[in-house]
Image 1 (cartoon, helix red, strand yellow):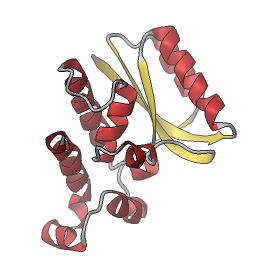
Image 2 (cartoon, helix red, strand yellow):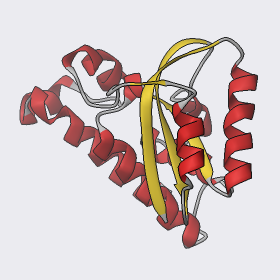
Image 3 (cartoon, rainbow, N blue to C red):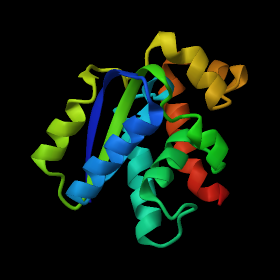
Image 4 (cartoon, rainbow, N blue to C red):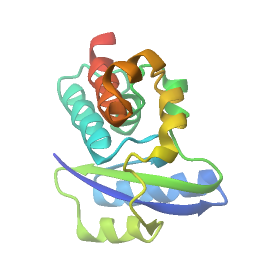
Length: 168
């Protein structure tokens, strides 16, 4: 399966309308599309690792959710609780988001349609401004940070993603 990330900012006035637009694009192109709050992402590697693990568990029929998009969100959140994973989704108002498109083939038309929903920008990478949100969301302790250093926070997030599969 192929994965394509589209990151940027967008203003969502109607969350149901936005999600419906994503579902229409996905259904029309035979792909899966998941929107993720980029303010809680620690880089493209974080999202790609979560997506890869979600695809693998879905293919093995060992997933928590029957929906690949939700499985991606579960792995991205590093948590098997759907309620917590959903808090990593998008919301009404201004969003920094990453749209994850997954499919055997991802048509250029689908990519263009998804790009039209956001002002494309590099919002997935880990920044110092995201540190508090990420350490809180992923329950990264001061002890962990002291042991590995602040620069390794993205690797601690990747560890959470990897361990999520073991917690099932």
